[in-house]
Image (cartoon, rainbow, N blue to C red; front, side, top):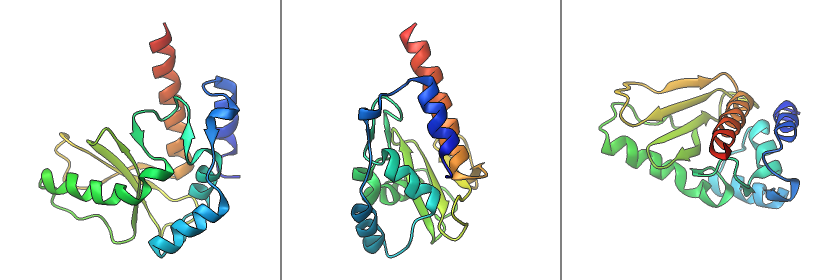
Amino acid sequence: MYLDQVKERLKELKLVSSDELVACTYPEITELEKKLKFSLPEAYKEFLLWMGKSAGQVLQGSDCFFEHLPYLKEWAVELLEENHFPNALPEDAFVFFMHQGYQFSFFRLSEGDDPPTYSYCEGTNQTSFTRSHNRFSEFMATEIELHAKYLTAFAS
């Protein structure tokens, strides 16, 4: 649905075998939503049901899988505090991605089923959050392409 093109592109790139993609279950997502007291966007649920627990070398080095989700917002807040960032995360922010402790991405739960993503990166002198992608599905497409370039360069 939202990630069909991303899934197809990942198959074309042959970056990961299908058995390396480990999905979350519907009950795990439901339990997560109960703990967090909100419903997740459909595009993000699709990600969780596709590769929510593991994706082989894809997204390696990033904290974005199910086991990390309960901690990401806390880690993001700590990073913002350490860097004296002038803005707090929006109340409806869901931090879904952190890379090596110096950058993170989030979406707002109030912005639809395939919401825009926002980011913060340490050391960039940002004074506000950057809207990085117009949709979560675009974020995923970009990440797949970045990992393809990285893995291709690394293999050479």
